[in-house]
Length: 73
Image 1 (cartoon, rainbow, N blue to C red):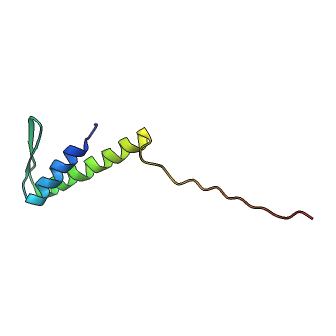
Image 2 (cartoon, helix red, strand yellow; image 1 turned 180 degrees about the vertical axis):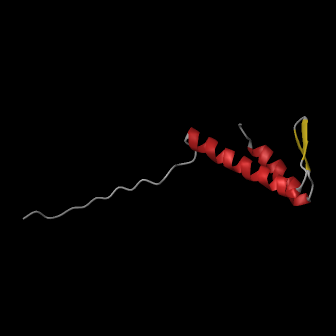
Image 3 (cartoon, helix red, strand yellow; image 1 turned 60 degrees about the horizontal axis):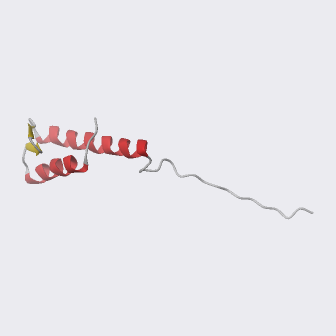
């Protein structure tokens, strides 16, 4: 599922306030517990990272270029 930064912000704001009800535009979700809300935040962060990696906005493993030289006699 495609997530947005605004969804993540809404989840984190609800967690900071201690609320279990989160609204995204015209939809409202009520979580059973704060633990369930933190799991949702982790899922959204994972999804955003995956989307960024797929689109190339988040670089993968750093590449290394090694150059060795020697004076040949």
